[in-house]
Amino acid sequence: MILALRHLHINAGVIYRDLKPENCMLNGKGHLVLTDFGLSKVSDECTSMFGTAQYMAPEIIKGEKYDSQCDWWSLGAVMFDMLTGSPPFTGNNNKKIMDKIVSQKVKYPFYLSQDARDLLGKFLNKNPNKRLNCDTDFDKKVRKHRFFRFINWDHLINQDDHEDHPT
Image (tube, rainbow, N blue to C red; front, side):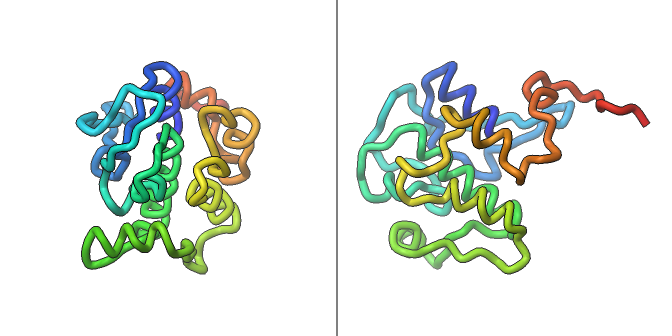
């Protein structure tokens, strides 16, 4: 997901705005493919409220100008969902969910590793200027984050499915 969003941001100038599990598919080789670009926008910044409430960044909800940083919040929300079984903020309706996103702190389940909590906390920072930016901080902070210590980023980037050490 990180590589797909970086590609959209850096190479196409696209803010995706609708990252959620149902928009993430796998191709025939098991690599991620993002789908449904209906809410995407070619722009440096936006002000319109688009997205799915559970994965929407606080700056969008508050009606502030936003940029591709909103996608990194959404990535954190999707990762939280994948690791725990539900998004970080839930409720009976979209208004309650959005109110929680803006006003409440993320509560991490006890079973998440410290590495997962640290990474999620960097993505789910309510201040977009302090949020982990995979576009600019990829080599220094993302690739080297302990959560990804077993990931061979070069293989992912090249979609190289061969292992380093054949068994």
